[in-house]
Length: 420
Image 1 (tube, rainbow, N blue to C red):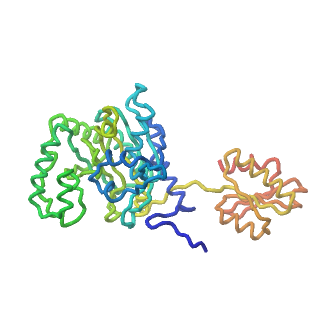
Image 2: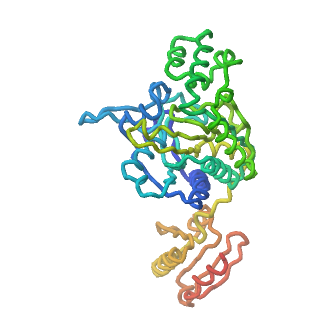
């Protein structure tokens, strides 16, 4: 028994459960690949300042949750707590925005890290699939991403999720709202840290989950009442496009995403079967982020969907994914000659795309057949000295128990026909 365990707040993905996580990642990525999004992968750690500038110095992510460290060379790095800042940094560094084909559409999948109090649905190491459309200000792009996320969830069989939608305005109309909200917050009975946060970024206080704070926020001024005409028109077009696509959503005037870079469209996917950690994904428009991290003006929009929480949502709805069999054929050799022959046949089966495994370790027939059953294989190929002398192998249907002699040279074609 090992004395080592996974660090607190983390988990190991092991078979067979890991197959569900892979299926969820694939389902989320599929509509993106079908819509012009190319895959991008960034390092697991970045310069601390990338997140301080982009995510926001007043956010809990930067002030409390980021895993930051100093290298032997004196560089200040952090394990990535989210994906957008990293993806935008990589796109700028590679000059993707200079190719003349905007927006640059990217998707990614990876692990992220935040130092949080562990609970079900909230981990210190978690997995997300995300998408970013960089370099275009167009309501159709915002709508496209919301529709693609909805499509991904429905392809998995999820039904009991809701889409919350809001607009956070832009640099023209948000300052007036910021002032009105700060005036309101100064009149509340808030702790010193929350009051400090209100002075830096008052919208973050609206995202405070504490019941005593939420109770005092009843009657707070709403951003929708302060939107400029351009933001109102933009938001209305997003709503119309989503509605025309048959995607249901709820207007939530108090929805504020927890990162400082959001502007205009903001949205969240929630699942009421998950308790307090109900958000399974979300995103929005971040028109000023590129400039925050030293790039040119590149209006952009994106989202990230949590793989871990999506799996929990599937469990909450009792959805069983239709996962492909890890093994379709299991070879059981009896004797050295059969071992050499069946090993070659297993290799051939794999080359033609049939999932096949082999009875390793020289097990006896009984033990080898138990291994075949545990593998979940639909068919077993069994061969001994007498079979090979007759030029055949025994093909056993593991569901019906029916066994048929098949010529050695015909086994590949026979299995291709039976497995379709």
